[in-house]
Image (cartoon, rainbow over all chains, first blue to last red; front, side):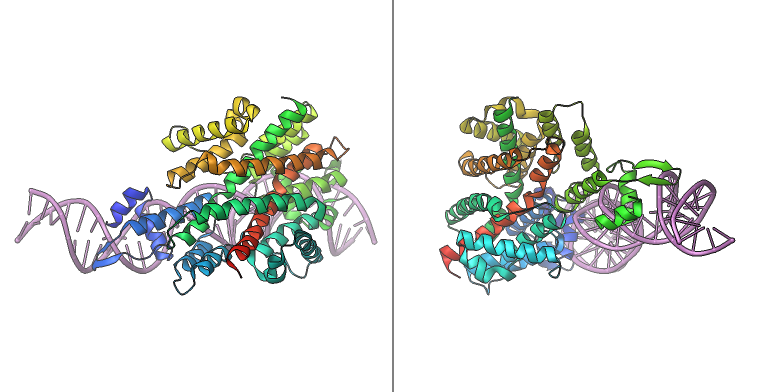
Length: 213
Length: 213
DNA sequence: AATCATTGGACAGTGGCGCTATCCAACTAG
DNA sequence: CTAGTTGGATAGCGCCACTGTCCAATGATT
């Protein structure tokens, strides 16, 4: 497959594909001559993942690069590879570690995790992006003056634990190891808007039930 | 309170406050003279909401304007006002209604809602932003070649129904009607990143439990 | 052999958006 | 009287995901 064909099959313009090649999101094709390279199905699949991450997940290009590097890193075991890919996915801006709101949010998260018995997250996770991506918006909320309590967060956390269980169940059904990290990334990112939209629909349904149409 | 004081109390620069005034996110202060206006606590609260929507919720300025218009519209009853505010919050890009993937996604949602017995959402919701904001990412997933089934979505939907229940429970605890729509918006938008972060942490915890550290 | 399109590569330009900076005349607090 | 602030207008900035243009080398077509 040549660049123009890759473009046709994927629906992504050649200019954009060139951009992704330049940004090292998409690996180079197999060089045939100085002015021709051969692309295959793996490029098509990768392109699909890139588009999904950028368009559906709104992941910045620089982050996509890191995530894909982790997905491709064969020196990691497959579990670590999966973890590394998710690890490389820090959403949202970081919280200022010195701000009092951040301290308060950290304490809140600490209590929450203790209450839930999520010991891995509590003991090993303080440096993980997931942990920080939880502290950051909580700090932001506190800073803005919106109160947050452990009691309020608990049911949300329990629901999300359930969701995460489903996520992994779905992942384990896949037999293909090579694509697992890739699929894990898809599952983690691409379903976020779906989850949020489901919440919105559920809110409308709940509103109609409680207060009538 | 003068502009400079509003800026100090809120931590938002005067230039940015002027920008919000210009964009009609923040109502004008009470005019004292040609070159002086008086701002009060309501401006401070509104400013906080604006910052939260933009920074935490990543809601575009134009959308914030619509949401706030709904929040302020006293011609609506309070339930409708709440609904209108949420209604004005369409996240993400629209799906092309003619695309086959959109058709398929629509059918999928139809089946899902029937299965769940969410009759309001099914019969009245086809035009609601929440409904469309569900169809859009599903269509995007299908288009990109990631399979989605009703069976997979069901548990997610049930979890989110539970989350929505908590959302409304929290809302009903508030006695103040005037701020309800405002609080509803906060609850709907500001907790989204928290929810997603909780899912990420839960995923790490689950991963550690299933596959070890 | 002669034409015309395509390729990889480099690089400047674009458009959207949330600010941010500057300037101004009118005013006002000390 | 003077230094500072205000509302208002307008231009510019910084980021980022592209997008458009140009080029020489090469391939495909006639």
